[in-house]
Amino acid sequence: MQRGLQSTNRRWKGSAIIIVVLAGLDLVWNQFSSYELLAEPASAETVVGFLPQFTHFEAARFDFVCIAENTASSLSPDAARALEEVLERYFAEVYQGWDEIPEERRIYATKEMGYADSAVGTVIGLEAGCIIEWEIKKTGLFWFHARYSDWEGNLAAAQRTAVFVWVLGRWIKIWQTALVVS
Image (cartoon, rainbow, N blue to C red; front, side, top):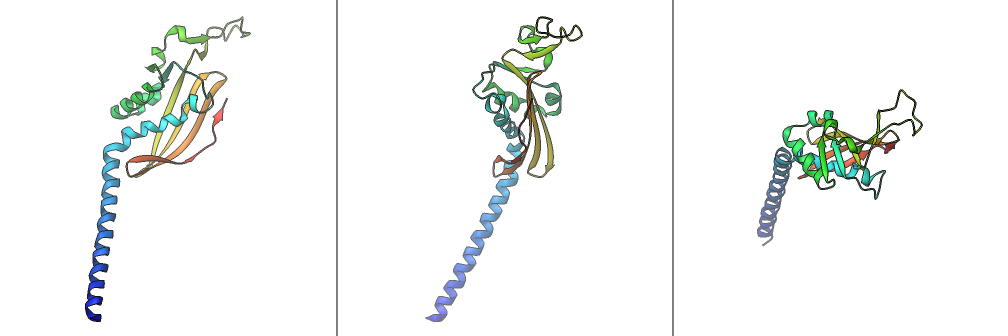
């Protein structure tokens, strides 16, 4: 009887080890396959927490956003499309570069505002809009550093850096700098 119990216990232990190994392999497979298929377009979602209406202009309403030229040119077509789709959920208009911002949405320095003659005519801000920059630097498999910045005007801008890690189908923020606001 004792011998039969020991044999049964060994079988259960062996079965448990096999189940744990298979579950571990499944997790590894899911980590790699989800990263390969979803990570790049999903990285665009990380921008949301850094948009000005959620950081230094809480409760403010922005009608448009402009994706800075250096951001647009550094992204793959899939990542650029994903970023635009994310931003369209928060802004009525998404512009691709400074040239697309309508002239009437730009605020220019004037003498009446107290600007020197040399500054008159330069853009000092945007009417109900902002420009965002988003730089990604992959720092290893499943990791990236990102620098986010926005500009609403000469005295209205912010910047923050964060580190994200890919965990089973989504990016998790694990570190960020303090928000630098001007």
